[in-house]
Image 1 (cartoon, rainbow, N blue to C red):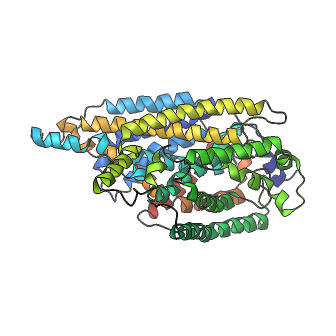
Image 2: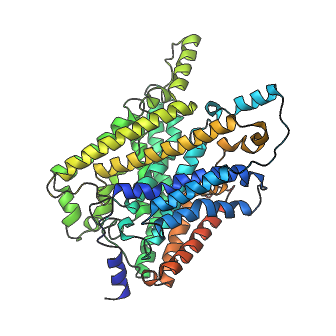
Image 3: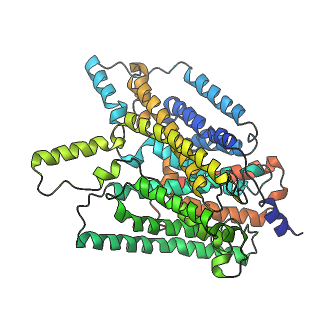
Length: 509
């Protein structure tokens, strides 16, 4: 076989690994975040905002350990996490530098009150723990799309051929979950009244705008198809199909979401999401759809791209709270008195768990437990079906969707708990250390802000670099040490591009 055939075989026929191993590897993201909180208090907060030391140090603290977790330490995630935890504790226990003189009791009480967790960062998706979640998901995705081409990246982390759980399978769903979380913001801000001709026109306009905005991503998907075919790049057809790629999925998801927006306020969006997943699973189990997707020959444009088409309905995201839409997408009745309107607003704010981090943590933690329970039950049921093997990223079946939601909900909860711990520590800090810790709870890494600001641009750059490196280097034959050097350089370039674009919003769609 030639190099192209060898490369296709290298990334094919993977069966995945255990969910426990995946969780332990991803736990590195939590320990690096904890390490950063200490570094921010002790070192980073003292650097000028324009200093290049900030992105360099944050890269070493936040990105490099993730790369090591995916490569050299992939078989020993507990060891790597233990090293990071011990480093965090050792740094934290070092004597704090002398700070500013103590404030008067009255001023100190006022400062502590202003830093209490219930008052921190009330904007829903600008909170530090959400910034961390989105950025780390992006970093892991960017690292994996190139690392998978090197032997240093375990084959169990590569996308499973048909059935199984793997890190890269999880990355696809997590990327969509993250985008869905952000794209829900306009809907959360909506205060539509009862249906009217104006509302119907707005709904049609929303779908039209989403369709128009998706065109640049469709164009990127077409460009990728032309480039891949033009350079005879090795392709794994069972990933999405002959022509379909992730850019097409990203383009069509907002249109699909806009089409369902009209149900918000009428039906709990959890019900809508679960209905899509259940109907999709029933179609796979009770119709020839699953057999067609896995076994049918690629004779038409539809069958050539059957994986991308069949998996599309499974990629959806749930809203932040079961009761959120009932109050947050409707206005009080027109005949309400001023007192009734005030009471309506009070209930709406009370129902919005974003305003109280403690209640938000309670809800997300409970949701995570529930999603894991539902996932294990549904996976057991689906695995019992003839011809089915549980989780399938290729089909985006119900077990895959539930696994993705359970994982992402759990890690958002973990980031939130670290955030609350830091907030509590800051609010009760001593006067000598309060100058360094006063704003820590409301901050997140600078490079993560840069990554989130232009996420799709960063993803596009990473894809272009991945293709370029694979064209220039025989990646599947490279020694582990050299592969890690290449991956570190690649990650540094991607983060560098994000850093160079910080403060500017580059429109892709």
